[in-house]
Length: 83
Image 1 (tube, rainbow, N blue to C red):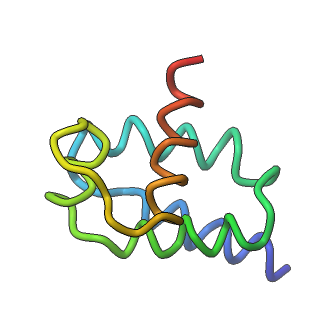
Image 2 (image 1 turned 90 degrees about the vertical axis):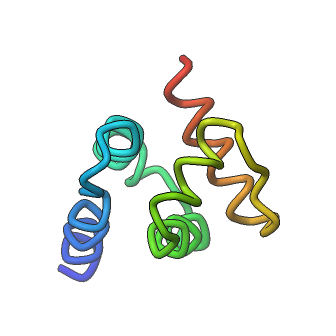
Image 3 (image 1 turned 180 degrees about the horizontal axis):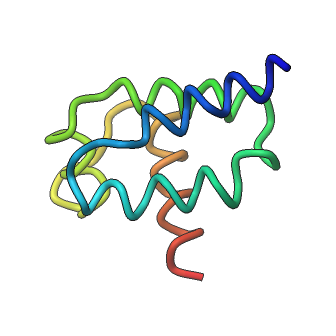
């Protein structure tokens, strides 16, 4: 039950109100969340705690994320979207 609850919380956090971010996060969580390690799930949760302007800048390539773990997660999401 904990995994389902955690995924539901993550899905809720993915609803950003910014279409550009929603179209990245929602499909990623629906399609890839279950295959992430516990550590990756925790990093995704940390990523979702970032402010929308920062997320937008990182995903659009306007700015580089300084946190290496978050940067890898951004890249993982982008790679998944590009497939």
